[in-house]
Image 1 (cartoon, helix red, strand yellow):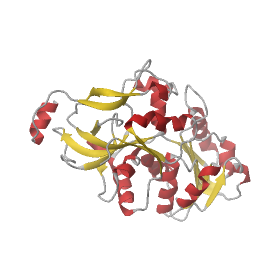
Image 2 (spheres, rainbow, N blue to C red):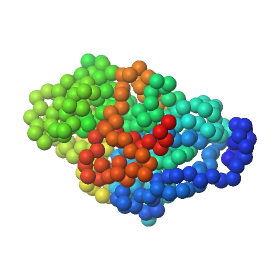
Image 3 (cartoon, rainbow, N blue to C red):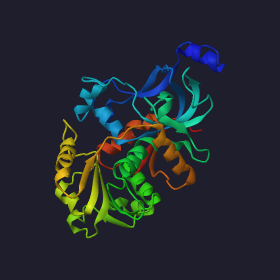
Image 4 (cartoon, one colour):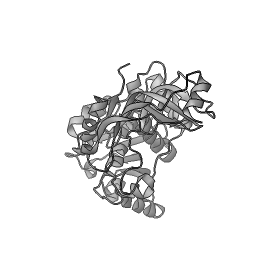
Length: 345
């Protein structure tokens, strides 16, 4: 459906292609390749909605798509020599202003959050199954930083980790985007949670509900005497032997990503070794790639609405400062979530 047809359906007057402000890149590289300029407002498919973006979240995946590293992502269809998607951003929160002919879950005027293509812009297109209604008492900022990291944390704990009430959970990388959600979700699901983070973030992790927190520079995994039913290793570099050392006899390890400096595979080798070893040991060693689906986003919406999960927003930036927000990942100082405020309202 064209924009003119959609606007006729929703009662708006047909209009020529409109321009919008957006953060774009024409080549892979550091945050220096990003620029803010005018581009054409996106068209929507029949199963998509057009969102007037209020806020967008920054996640580790955005940095990978910006740099084109690990190179494996280029082979997966994101553009071999240059990015196919010029406008960055995935996490989104805003107001629906247009709907495709097959859209049944939303109407114009709905406030939504979830995952969109190119959310670092004034408008973004999103498939209806990648969105949920934003709870009325939750800010656009909080909703905007929830979907990508929240989905990963939720699926790591439930779909893969099979966490149960009363279990002990260790979150390694507890102060990052995924980790801050994982600590809160594990606690909400009835587990007792400990966390590993850097010294400057220990109080943050404790405030999210962790019972014990460990400075990764001061306490090696081998020095932790507790044994855990479930360990989430988020973006870590820990050897499998060290990770197994903190698992209970029948404990489960879930490796969530990896940042070991491997520019070709991004550390996937460690995940593969874990899954190959798993059938031969008492521990269950797993890895996974999260999948965006409305059911996960709706579960997160429920947690946001109840207040059992409160996103840890560490930095607020406007659209022109997006490169500055992403630079925090480059220099290793990202904690919690950063939000891009596209509109103040």
